Image 1: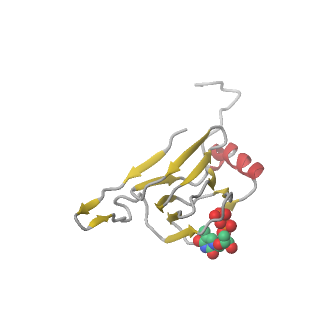
Image 2: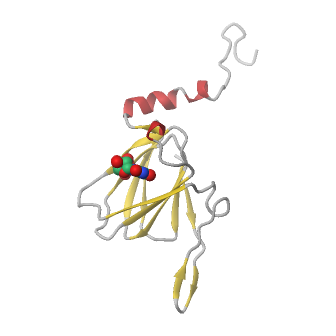
Amino acid sequence: MEITTFDFEEHGDERGILIALEENRNIPFTIRRCYFMYNTQPGISRGFHAHKTLKQVLICVRGSCKISLDNGTEKATVVLDRPNRGLYLSSDIWRVMHDFSDDAVLMVLADQLYDESDYIRDYGAFLSWVAERGKREGVPEEDPEKGIGG
Ligand code: TYD
């Protein structure tokens, strides 16, 4: 599956490193929310949901964690283990965050405020949601009487 990651520019000098994140520049949307997770307990996995419309960029600003992604047909796992790496997640991806290091701080930038109604928390409902994407987005169905290309 296609995975979009960003390697943010590091402004480094003898004092250390600084990374700047800016909406519609190196973050591909308007940033309306930022939240972060830390002190994640050993063996814990979080997430287990997709979104209807939300876009996000995940950055593990300290430590490391893994993000398992599932678009309904393909799965992949991405390791986030440096603060200059961002993982872009479009809405209709089932995601699980896991294998957090003790010191992990996982920061998320999002293009919308928190809205529970945007969540799909049931995996079966997620599969139905992606299967019906064409209909929702108004992709015309083939007319069986005309046949393909007719
Ligand atoms: P939850 O959705 O369980 O987190 P995860 O997807 O990582 O498993 O969120 C934990 C709690 O935090 C839940 O009560 C909802 C709340 N929350 C907010 O209030 N605002 C937010 O932006 C987010 C992401 C969660």
